[in-house]
Amino acid sequence: MSYPRLPALTRRAFLASAAVVSASTILRSQARATSVRAFHLRAGYGRAQIAPEPYGQTPVWCYDGSLPGPEIRVRQGERLRIAVANALDEETTVHWHGVRVPNAMDGVPHLTQAPIAPGEVFVYEFDAVDAGTFWYHPHHRSFEQVGRGLYGPMIVEEAVPVQVDRDLTWLLSDWRLTRSAEVRDDFGNRHDMMHNGRVGNTVTINGRVPDTFPVRKGERIRLRLINAANARIFGLDFGSHEPVVIALDGQPVEPHAPEGRLVVLGPAMRADVILDMTADAGSQVSVVDRFYEGLEYRLVDLAYEKQPLRDTAPDWPLALPPNPLPEPELATAARHEVTFNGGMMGAMVMQEMGGSMGEAAPGGMMGGMGSMMNMMHSGGIWFVNGVAAEGHIMDPILTLARDKSHVIAMTNATAWHHPIHLHGHSFRVISRNGKPTRHREWQDTVLMSPRERVEIAFVADNVGDWMLHCHVLEHQAAGMMGVFRVA
Amino acid sequence: MRTILSAVALASFVWGTAPALAGEKDVTLYKNPQCGCCEGYADYLRDNGFTVTTKPTHDLAEMSRQAGIPDEFQGCHLSFIDGYVVSGHVPIDTVEKLLTERPDIAGVTLPGMPLGSPGMSGVKEAPFEMLEITTSGTIGGVYARE
Image (cartoon, rainbow over all chains, first blue to last red):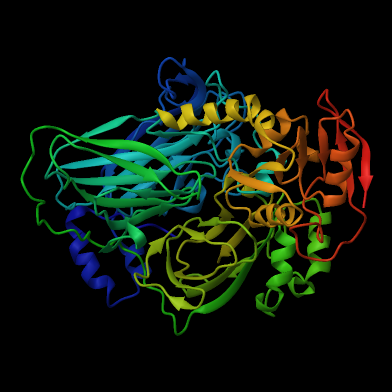
């Protein structure tokens, strides 16, 4: 498809008209933006002070010698031209995670472009269609390239952003460090692949193990959280504070308090959170990651300065303007099934869930144990509709009619969590285990719990072959990816 | 901060003191925090008279390696029982045999998670082969077959 190039001034008019006419028709008729923002990124080797003194610097792979890579920040509607130079000793690509780019700019090796060879440059060019919090990372051997530090934030500002005192990005990641603070070399080991991926022993915010984070009473912060970890799921508890989620995966959502006041982010997911700093001046409040039971830890302390900024929280509006996403029509949508299998205990779960896999599931999924054993014997660990991917090139598991609405019912018939990412599109999460979701949130990566069934809906308005994969990068490397075609 | 410090400290604690502290019937079982079957195995050991403490960790593969078990022979959890390491869903008869015979090995491993093994559901498809972990940190022969 051709993408909307929205001058900021026409956005409001565009949004109004999008309600009555097919949005994608509108998108194609937009005039080109004149403004092009040029960026350069160099993927290479560097060193970073990840762990605090007295630990030394850690050798990492990173962009432009900085960890995380430089923040790419543009206004909605601007066109980006990003020249990526490869100074690594191996091939790479860059995927602009969550950004609805044309297929050739999506950064998937072999599927959408030839990998960037060492010493070569590839120029990506696309429009910032949606405002929001995005990130970039390699899609080539990502389980190691991302795990060693290749990632950075990409922020697309709204024409009229919500009013806050500070707009901050916390890129969260984790590392598996040795006692001398070097990255442990066991990438892609079988244990990680079969269980929940490479979860590290050291957690960083913006590339450093944090200690305290200074704040002021009465201050309102827009905190853009990005989970860039290979496999770690975060469940952030902000103590006495009451975070309000205003966007998920870059897309605005009705402002709401997260369930249990815990901001849960699977790998690759983002959340924009409004934090009113309501504790006492001079006090300290810990942010605790509670996702894994028995392994809770203090991520960082919010340290209040002695002077308040104001006495009470501001009452400024919280809602973000919507992005130009076409609304799927559920009544007429084509329905599709995607089933995930495999991993440790996979045979057991598949046996238990045998009755709920659905007759429509292809690949002899109803064969239960026998077919699971066949899958296992194929050498793969994780399977999408019965197939374990061995590379980025494969026959599509789904073909979606262009500009039509589609519902994909996804079943996680495994014992593990999976953040499932679709390229080229954002989708509404419309139900979980048959129950409608409260916010019908737009996401590009949906975290599925073990044995969970999730329905997503979207208009397939972006032509091409796109990845659908688990963003636990070890799961992806061990087969958990497929291609869907929009044609 | 403590994120790395605690991780490193935990690792050194494990290897420095945990086996020495353990009594005959005391078991420390390290497991993936999200793995339910490992709890099933812990209950199985409890049913057979052991006192089991389960500890979640994200570092199981490295801990298993340090215990002398290469990646392809690792079970999905790691137990320390009376001076021996027992990796995976090893049946109780083999554990008792190990503690009675007290062979000069580091322990035993049942790689993977075979269906029908203790803590696992499903039907046993073939005899379980428990492999020796030698004191020099390699895989020896079959210690027991059940």
